[in-house]
Image (cartoon, rainbow, N blue to C red; front, side, top):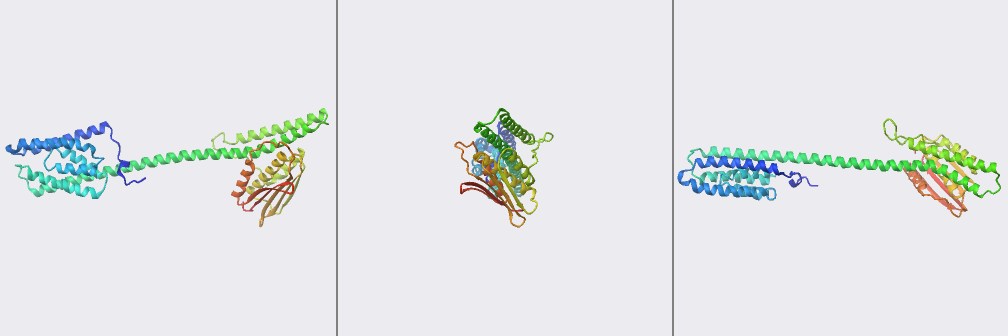
Length: 386
């Protein structure tokens, strides 16, 4: 947006603003006309009065289009001042309006033309005041400079107000955009957190329910035990869900809050829970040093996602987890399981691997999922600095 265009910051006038400008023009024109007519000799009074008033009325009409043609209207009214004292009011308004544009290339010629027109009027209209010409010229010059200076001040003030208004509107729009982005980020965080927490539990429930549906040799006690285990996992899933939803906002401040995140020290507990649920899983921990908290959290999520995928797509298959590395070479995480044999795999969004891949890339590492030799392999590498 080009601020040099005065049309941008010129305010639109309402009826009462037009009204007081009209009243002021009439008052100035009346004062100057009466003063000029009283100095006329009797023989020149009626002809000049008629011409003066006629040109003044035309000036009152012409000044209403000063914003459309500012230079042309100002020049026309300056020329009208050569023969009409009643055109002074419209001429002053046109000059002030022109000066609000603050363009010297327009103001200087028009100002000189206004001063010259005043001298021409003094020469054409005989007067009996006996004033010195150089005093009249000095007063006319100073008065014209004051009028143009007032117009420049009004133009500067209008542009400042316009700039402040634009800045406020831009700040408000940016605030709305930031709020929208914050909402989107918060929704994405909620979705990732709920996926990481609930997908693991739901996959356990699906695996156990699937196992019960295929077992026909279970007695009532064993069947009740399996159903009880499913119920326990469902309760744990609901508990995790309440924890996630409960910490999204702090109850006192209303600010976003984060639940305690798992670290690499929680990987053995995760493996133990999976074994207790009947999953054949092997963990090889070959890390030579204690992982930083942020790095350990990413490793935990990769292992959790690999186990969840194995439960979904290869229930009953053995899962092998290997974590190795150190401060120099970084950390390698590998989760391998044979391909599944389900005819209808459980539904999945596919967003788990997408989110983990993005998380690994943000940490400066990589994550890829490949199928080779009849097995599904999830392999990630993360730098130690992550």
